[in-house]
Image (cartoon, rainbow, N blue to C red; front, side, top):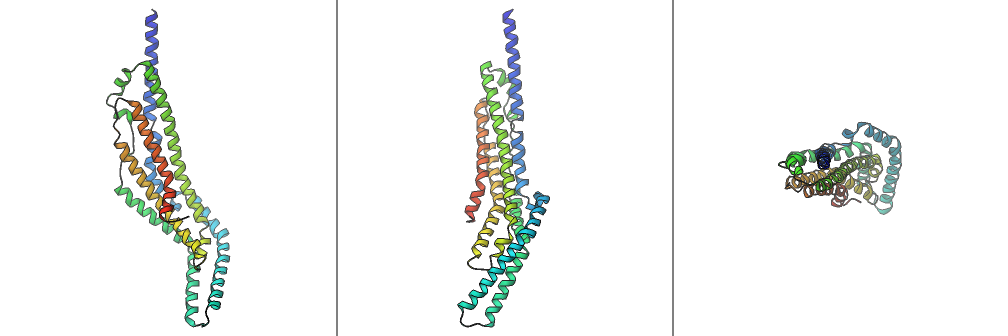
Length: 287
């Protein structure tokens, strides 16, 4: 009688643990699969396409708050340029004033069309990402339960202790994968918020570009713009590498090694996405 009771309890625990493991495996990579598949769509969008409301607010703040400051700066820079030209040259000719007025017109044009020029940089970045999406392809979806030949048979052959350990492992890995999916979302959103913050003050560095000394501010700003735009391409490359790594995983009856192997690749993906910002700035020498 006691033997039957113990057998029934063991069977109940086996079914409970098997169901828990199967459930964890089924939903484990859902969030990460969704986020990795959305990366291309997220990074390939321009600031106005990602969130039109935020873009309109940033554009309004830039035009109403930052543009007057840029006007004061460009007036100071042009006056400084004129004074330097008159004091450094002994011979004043018409050609000098012609060059000065051309430079002044270019400076005013740049400040007046700040957002058009800034968005043109991100349009270039979007074009590169869209072109890369057609060449860089790979399936980032992971389904361990279908990758293993016979999951139910594998679980039935395990002892209760092994099932308990595997259930804890799948629970831990599932929790870690959810954290990874949240981190991927944070990285994508932080980049877009950084773009909005960067573009909100665009008129000020644009106003300095007509002067050789002050122009370094505008030049470095342009480098930063290109770094943010081409960071999206580096993110695409990271996802492509992740897809290749995941496709190369050899699933076996050893579920633990397969689970932690996939989780390790997902951690590498998050770390690589995080590093794309500093790498892109390093490439364009932006600081």
